[in-house]
Image (cartoon, rainbow, N blue to C red; front, side):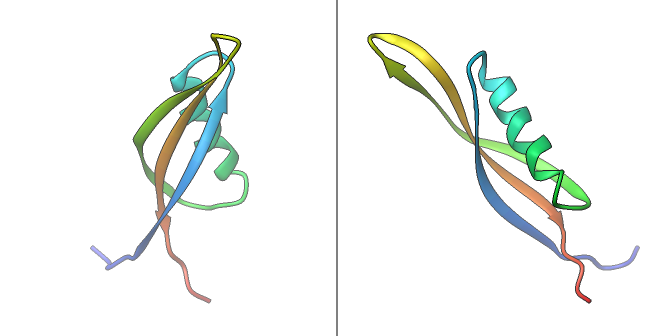
Length: 70
């Protein structure tokens, strides 16, 4: 097996419907510009509240991708 290096970044995804959708949004949005995504780990979840109602779900996601040097 060839040796590899992976970079880990932290993102926050949001959704009006669920934490799952918020995490998915973070990963799929990152995938539009990053290549070879490997693992996503949800490290924190919270909700935005307005007028005593939940208006958004937020997930902090640690995302790893393969580091490729030129």
